[in-house]
Image 1 (cartoon, rainbow, N blue to C red):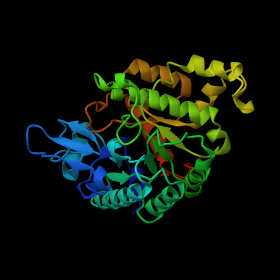
Image 2 (cartoon, helix red, strand yellow):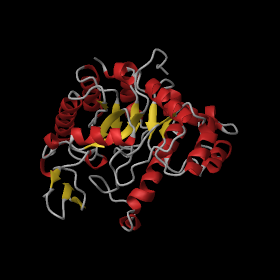
Image 3 (cartoon, helix red, strand yellow):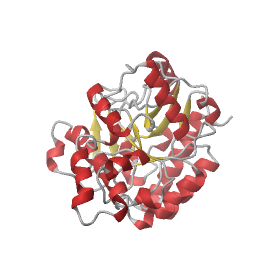
Image 4 (cartoon, rainbow, N blue to C red):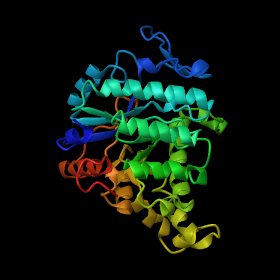
Length: 340
């Protein structure tokens, strides 16, 4: 039975739930990924030269499906669409290694969701440094593995409005699947970010929001949504800092010479937000309220970062949860009116 059939009966659908797969370890050559001693008091996880200390993946919901399902029940979640760990996008490594890793990861994730298709489905990881390979991997994941779409980083080694990506965006439209975007910490397998991000987990607390804001602005100002009007892209964390910067982003549309002609009017940036989707993982009702006032409710979907350090509690009014769930069904093509 296709995942869409199970989604039709779900009362809550979480689209921000990462998985770590034992079968994907050591599939990217010397980049790993590699799990350290998960039974000690100091577990670690390595990707290239980056080492995440103190996080235990094994023996928890990230890697154990039974524990995930039990935790979902405890949280009141019916359904999740599982996605790759952002530490393992591998968008900057050699393309052959990236292709190998993505194939192994997607095969392993397909096997995992096959054990409980009534509760979980999957998004594909893709080797975005090679557009043709990414398209092939996407087609295979959707048509052969039954995946619901793709899940990539906000920084993939080239601007998101690069014309070289247009065939990839067209492939998403042709396959009728959404494209999810979520940041990774700067410097994992790509260029280092601002050194200030190395303090106080600022790479996660502020760096992610900056990446998401840049992604949204690039997609809109760069004309991606104009060239692909039926492409569905969903950004994590309500688009990062977009809500707080909406005045400046709108103002640029009437003040800056590089803005596309179609956006040269008051409020054009804000209007363009209606063509994107966003998950609700923001942790603050004031922030969510502001964002809802900008984009409405029809393009918002539930995201929890399930089992992560900042997992979102489901303190959501029932009517709004129904709205988010219905939106997710549309985004994931689980109802008759799901095509953009």
